[in-house]
Image (cartoon, rainbow, N blue to C red):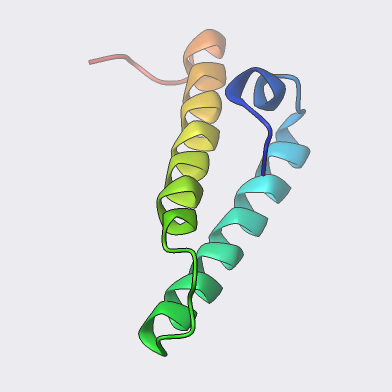
Length: 72
């Protein structure tokens, strides 16, 4: 999870999708641990949400570069 957004930009589309899936699964498990009062590092929730946002940003950048999405 130490990869920054520049490293994400080097991923191909399938690797990016896999990374997104892993991050969402980990976030789900952390939320479950939080609900059960078993989560020790609550800062990790925010880090994962930021990671997911970074992945979505890279995906959106690629769509805009291809001209597949009209910008607002």
